[in-house]
Amino acid sequence: MDILERAKSVLRLEAEGILNLVDHIDDNFSRAVDLICESTGRLIVAGIGKSGIIGRKFVATFNSTGTRSMFLHPVEAMHGDLGMVCPDDILLALSNSGETDELNILLPVIRGIGCRIIAFTGNPRSTLARNSDLVIDVGVEKEACPMGLAPTTSTTALLAMGDALAVVLINEKHFESSDFRRFHPGGALGQRLSMRVSDFMMTGSLPTVREVDAMAEVIAVIDRASIGVALVVKPDLTLSGIITDGDIRRLLARGASIFSLSAREVMTPGPKTVRQALPAYDALNIMESFEITVLPVTDVNGVVLGVVHLHDILGKGSFKFNGT
Image (cartoon, rainbow, N blue to C red; front, side, top):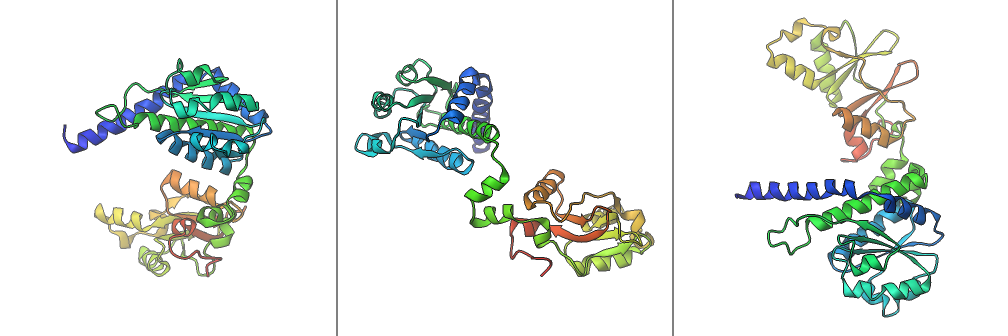
């Protein structure tokens, strides 16, 4: 097997490992969600080695999406960190084999504190499973590692099950984008989510043309604006269509006599638009879904107010605030 086929084989094995988890979702998963939602404490995540690394990712995801969480290293726990654990907390224990000594020795102590225990394990008959209140099976048939030694498919499956739990908790806790912004006040992601289309849409000298304009004028407008589009408007400035530089290239590739055409003959009618009050992440989702880089901004009557570019939303270069 050559390099490319070996790499593809790894991806297939890991994808299959995740898909097989669908059949592992049962009533225990629902009970785990209910238990976490009803808890007044934190979700304490514990694991050793690769499971511990995945556990830290769990904690980061849970905390940012409304589920208070903390990572507890099992060894450090036995040397004083157990003081951070309270009876109202829930332990989420991670171990593929379910026979990790450093983790299992912690279970009776956690139980003595009064915590409930949820296990993510690939071995539902393991010591970890027997000592847990709820068991979520994250087992996989085969590791991608050819020797079956390095955790590969199993850690991918574990990570995916954690994401499934986090996303379900988002819905059950009615966690909103406004809550997400509160937990992410800084950084590019927080900035993008806190903005509206009106905050960075281009206004003023917009690349607009009339339906009757010749394509020579359309091309000149596209060139001047340098965003790759011309907005075709009616006399009352309502949006009629859009022409992109890609449209022009495709016409030329087909040998069309482009300079004999009008904007109306070339434009795509009824293009996707957004309102200026729309959150930036919604505009981004529209662009990604329809594979477009520019969105006209219109009012309720379809009058063109501006245009927003993908690069501005993603923050490539400087943000453009109201076209400045």
